Amino acid sequence: MRILLTSTFAACAALWMGAVEPASADTPVTYTNEGRALFRFAVPDFWMLRTGGPREIEDTKLGDARAVARVMGMRPVTDDNVWMGFVSPTGVATIQDGIRYLEDVDKFLVKEPTINSTSNTRIGGLPAQVFRGTGSRDGRGVNFTATVIDLPGNRVVIAIAILRDGADPAYADDLNAVFASFRSLQ
Image 1 (cartoon, one colour):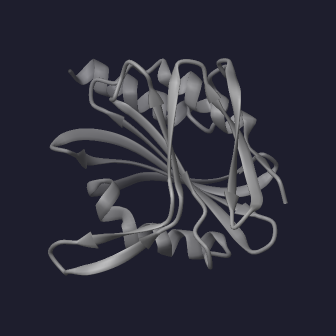
Image 2 (spheres, rainbow, N blue to C red):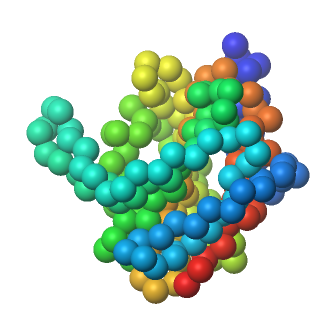
Image 3 (tube, rainbow, N blue to C red):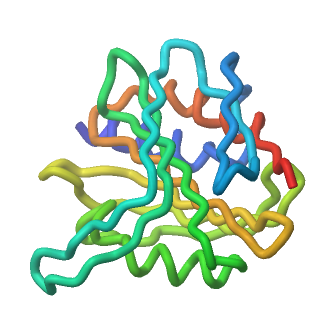
């Protein structure tokens, strides 16, 4: 178990650092908001994409609702141990605003999150801040990466990747390919 967890964590660390050659990612997808194209990326072969419009999620302990913008989530067709999602919330204009947004919705993504590292990088030529950590989801341990990408025009993209314990570390290749394909359309 320790070897698998270590290799999964290493795959997460390699993610967004360019240490792994990108795999083929062949299906282009465009994220739009109110009819305006914001960014695009390519979904890897044999992954499925689910989209959802704006909605509210409620914190059952506090009874307060949190607005969530359109989410584009994807996972491998044959493995639900890996998930990646993109969201670009209206009114979230800077990387710092994106971090505050993450703090507001983090309890819905990962329970008991622990940040292990942060880094500044560029994705699609744009400034980005990356947070890597561990926690749990649905009672299982996870490694996660949360990324805030600064789009032109006072907007950000928030990307989350979750690898549950037992995930095949080779999926990091696909996740890297998604980020390698990311481009702003503004």
